[in-house]
Image (cartoon, rainbow, N blue to C red):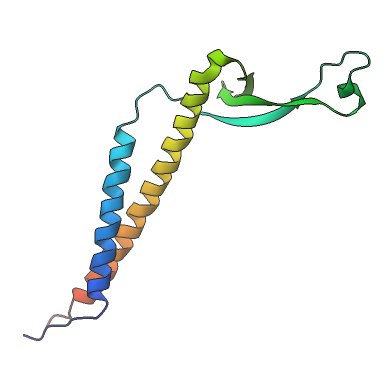
Length: 129
């Protein structure tokens, strides 16, 4: 029986092992999230008070102020989050963003691992005799 080996096989195996370790770390981080998390985004906005001689009526708006943007019933809702009691909302939105970022990386990593396994399979497989 002739063995078909490739110099790339050990490299592919190391890449798979490294990716599997990262996958475990990401999966562990994702299952540690505790709710609630809020689907939203944080952004800075300027505002106008529209008082008579205020600077904002002359093109120099107030701010920037921190706002949360959330989707409610299909519409964007903006909420000022500069008050101290809004800290939990800011944390929940940041947790949502962190969760989504980790989930996207996990999905990409799963695709990369699948690709590496396909490469390994092609290197290890020989034609039937």
